[in-house]
Image (cartoon, rainbow, N blue to C red; front, side, top):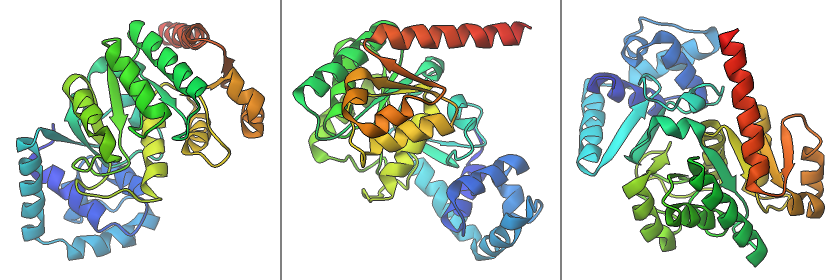
Length: 301
C-alpha cells in the first residue's frame, strides 16, 4: 500500500483536477507518485500540465493533512483506500483507459476477483428477468466466479442475493460514496455483501447518487470484470451503456437470448465481435474458458 502522504496527494490532485478523473489517474500513474506531481517534479503530457500546475498552487499542507485524517478515519470504519499507485489496485480495472484514480473498499478484494463477471440489467425487471438473473448468478458462483453488480433494485439485487445464497463471492460497485447506500432498502444486502465480498466506490465517501455517478459506476464495473452479462435492459438503461463499455474495454459481452429477441439495440450489439448470445450459464463459462486458454497459449508462446 502507498504511504499516507501519497494517498493524500492522490485525493488532493483529484479534488482540484480541471479534467476528467481518469486523465488525472493516468498522470499520477505515469509519474509513479502523486507527491512528485504535487511538488512540480513531473510535468507529464502537455494537455494536463497547465491544469495540474494550477491545482498544485491551490493545495496546502493543511489540506493534505485533512486527507490523511480522512483516510485514517475511514480505516476505523472498516474502509480501505486503494489508489492507482497501489499494487493491489484491481488488475482488470488498471488495464482500461478510463480507470479511476482511487477506490474506497469496504470488505475485501481478493485475487480470485480477477475472474469476475458482471451480471446487470434494468431496475424494472420482469419476474422472468429476475429468475434468469438469479439463475445465472448462482450458477456462476457455484463455478467459483465472482459476481459483480451495481447494488440497484431489480436485476442487480437479484444477482447479489442469489450469489450470497449460493455461498459465492459478490462485489457491489456503487454509484454513491462508500458511506451512502442507495437505495436505502438495500442496506441489509450491502452489509451482507461487505461481510463476505466487498463494496467498492470511486466517489468521495459521502457523495449522493446523481445522474452522472451511475454511468461512471458502469465504467468501473465493466473494467473490473472479464465480461458482462446483460439480462434485461431497455434502450435507455444503464445496463445498455455497460454493454457498450464492455466492448470498448475489450471485454466479453454476453446478451441473454430473450433480451436479443425483444430489444433492437441488443440485436445490433449481438453482431459485434466479442458478443455472445447466451441461453444458459454454460454458454458464458464455455466462452470464458476458451478465452483463458487462448491467453495461456499466447503467454507460453
